[in-house]
Length: 424
Image (cartoon, rainbow, N blue to C red):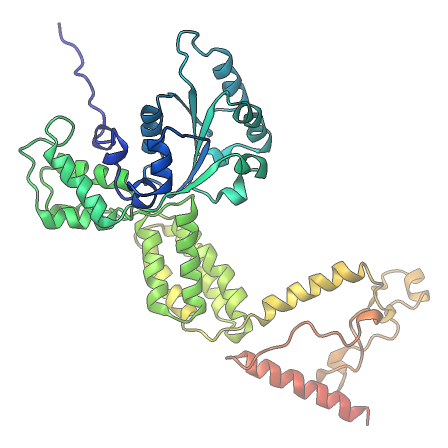
C-alpha cells in the first residue's frame, strides 16, 4: 500500500541554530564578553524585547534562550493570538511540567494597548518570562509599562560574512543541510550572501531554491529572477522609500533611480511608487515646474493601466524628470500656513463684497454690491481685498526664485506695484 512520503522541513528550519554558540551575526549581544551573554551563562534570564529586522535570529534566539535556561517555551503570534489565548495558556499549564514558562510573542507590536496591558500582571508576578519579538521600534508600538519591565535587545542585520558561514554550514552538514552532490560555485554563495540583505532565513531559502533547480552557480543565480530583499511592511520598506524621496529632493537622479529599482525588484507595487511621485511633484516642485504634477498623475494612471514590467519605463521617465526639476516647497508651505490661520482664527466672516447674492434679501443686505470684476479693470487687476478683514495683508504664498516660480514672483511684484501706482 502506497503512502505519502514524509515532508522534509525547509532548509532554513533544518539549519536553525541549536545553541547560543551556533548563532552568528550578533556578537555584540552573544559574544563571550558581552554583558547579556555573561548574565545568560550565569543563569539570569529576565523578560526581553528583541528588536531587529526579519531573518536576524529573533525566533531562534528565543528558542535557544529557553533551552539554555531550562524554561518551557510557549510561542504565540500576535497576528493570530490575543488575550483569550494568553488566558487559556496560563490556565491550562501542565501540572507535571514545573519548569518556569518562557512566553515568546512574535510580532508583539501588533498587539494593541489592552492586549499588552494583559501581559503586565503575569510579567510582574513572575508567572512567566516574556520574550517579545518586533521588527518595529518598541518606543512607537509598545506601552511604556511593558517596555520598562523588559530588557531591550537590539539585533542587527546579519553581515554577509556571517551569512556566508551559514551557507557553508548548510553545505557541510550531511544530516540537516543539502545533499553532498549539490553543485556549488563559491562566487554564487557570495552573491547570495550579499543579495539577502542581512536576512539569514532568506539566504538559506535562496540557496535551497537554487539547489532545487539543479546547481548553485552564478549563472543560475542571475537567471533566478528577483532575489533582492525589500520589506514591504516594516522599517526597511520605509527606509528605502525615504531614501527614494530624499534623493529626488536632492536632485540626484541616479540615486533616485537606484532606490526606485530596489523597490521594484523587491516586488513593490508600481502604483505605490507612482503615488509617492504624485505627492512629491506638488510638495517638492510645485510651481517651480507646473509640468511635474500632470506628468506624475499620468504616470500613476499609466502604471495602474499597464502594470509591470512595462510600468518601469513610465516610472523611470517620471523619476528622472522630478529629480532634475527645479525645486520649491512654497505651495506646500503656503497651504499649511493657511490651514494654521484657519485653526487659529476660526470661521471669520466673508467680506460683504465677496458674498454671493442669489436672492433679493441678500442683495438688500449688500452682498456683492461693491465687488469689482477684475476683467473690467485695468490690467485685469481689481484694487480690492479678498481675505477676511482680520487677515488683510497676511501672506501665505511666497514664491521662490526657482524655475517657473521666479516668473510668478515677478508677476506678483508687478501687480503690487501697479496697484500702488493707482493709489497715487
